[in-house]
Image (cartoon, rainbow, N blue to C red):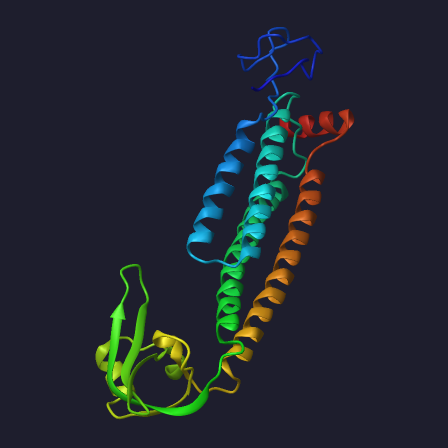
Length: 276
């Protein structure tokens, strides 16, 4: 239950906290977030844990998601408390209104960039990490994939999937064509012209795997090593991007404080300039 004992401005004891203003001085009441926000965080953690266990996510990702939920909840509680607290005293005038607007917009954009890097960087790392361990230690050998038919399948939410059916050592196999094409085809006709029937593609065959994962296009690196490097690159660049955006947000927050008038003399000076 939300509760408060004294008004932050006049110091009067507050017994009934259902109102939004102090009955003595009329200041807004600062309400400290109660247990509901943490119960919501617990529910989110429970749902995400069940989801990741059902779909076979690595166990360490449960801890990562739990940490993200904890940080997000703590940040939300802090923002709510600080926002309510700022309503109590009269607002400070801005000495540099143009700079204040610019810094505010820049902070919003950097915050969006921070969470985008966190989300997409984590997805890229997780995908490469799973592929890396899928192929790590698996027996394989080089062979040739003889294309019989290619398929262009467009997704409802955008993007497309390109793959082929064919034979490897007399056995029917399927393979993804994205690593072979390097650039995505735009339609079925273009795909057929770029990968005609009876095209021979050098591949690695993983006999112990299933589906398209059995066939991988030969590249500069074996599949396991290639995915390992991709995972490390996503991790390193992601952490560097998070550190950079967090540093910029910190500097912008310091700049934002400079925009406010701190002293009474400064308050009068700004007020006089606005009147004139």
